[in-house]
Image (cartoon, rainbow, N blue to C red; front, top):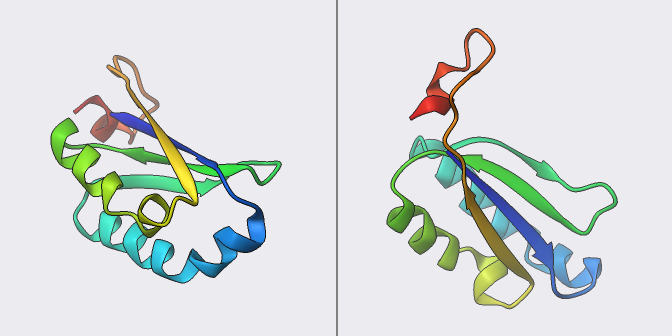
Length: 94
């Protein structure tokens, strides 16, 4: 599993300019079966995505995020070897 932590490099109004294409990119990540959960950080300094899949593919996909392309946010990708989950979350062990 991967924790994709993105941090805004530009003000929120600049992030808002690219929010629609970023959210289309997020929805595509869900359609591919890679994204499991996502949301904004509080306070609003970026966001977090929980993902599964191949690291190289995830890294390439992150590079294609409109936020990345336009320099709005930087990603920190942390790989996590999940060993224990609540019932129903076994998919996280991939």
